[in-house]
Amino acid sequence: LVRQLATSLEASATLVDTSMKVIVKLMHGQDSELCGLSMELINDVLDPIDQGSASAPQGNVAELEERKAALLAQERYMEVAEVDAELKALKAGDEDKELRWLRCLSIANELLQNINKANASLAGLLETVVLPGIQNHNGCIRGAAVAVLALLCLAFAIHCFNFLFLVF
Image 1 (cartoon, helix red, strand yellow):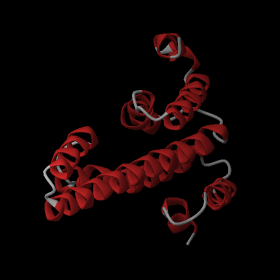
Image 2 (cartoon, rainbow, N blue to C red):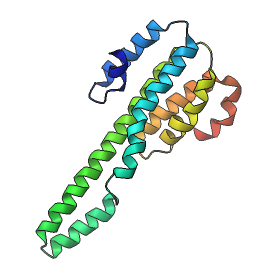
Image 3 (cartoon, rainbow, N blue to C red):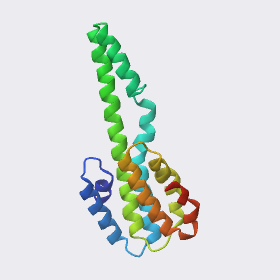
């Protein structure tokens, strides 16, 4: 149940943070198991993004907006409705992706705040979650990714100077 709450997009951010704290308390002193479980949770949240990219509506928002304006000028309202539906689907997909990224970064943040020793399973966290999060256009995601990067640098203090250039 706690695992489902941690990965649920319908659950509030507070509920997700609380469920992660429960997981941390249950696995107190078992850093390697906690790291492994947290990485599984992150993968569970990110998997629909990878799978959805193939079935997502094609095109970008700017192109569709231009097409919609051109169709409105030509008074082709049936086609305007179709383009409008594509725009709504594309925007909804973007919101879902952003929510998934924030959920993953929240899980990673809670994990890194509560481990005592760095673990080999955290090595993939940088490439799969942190760096793509820093490159994201959304400022909230970027900020959360920088916070996770800072926690990763503390966990892997010996490697922190290799990634310091990303912050400045």
